[in-house]
Length: 74
Image 1 (cartoon, one colour):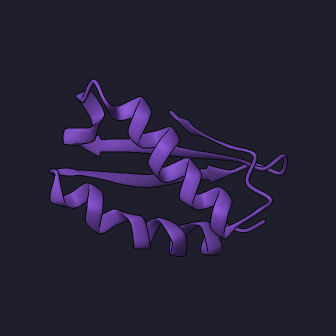
Image 2 (image 1 turned 90 degrees about the vertical axis):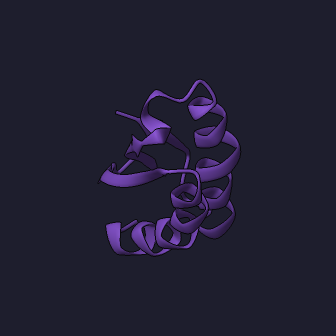
């Protein structure tokens, strides 16, 4: 469990978010497998942000890094 591996995956997701005027910032990676991120830009106030977080960011992180339990927007 390390921030570098999470950041690498987020960097792969980032272009899709930036295409819609948003972005994601890695805040912390907890020992229990919880990844804390902050949705920024257009994602921050978007009504679809929870869906983006769950169906986009969290899904991809779990596929790439099986130890990820969940992703929280802080």
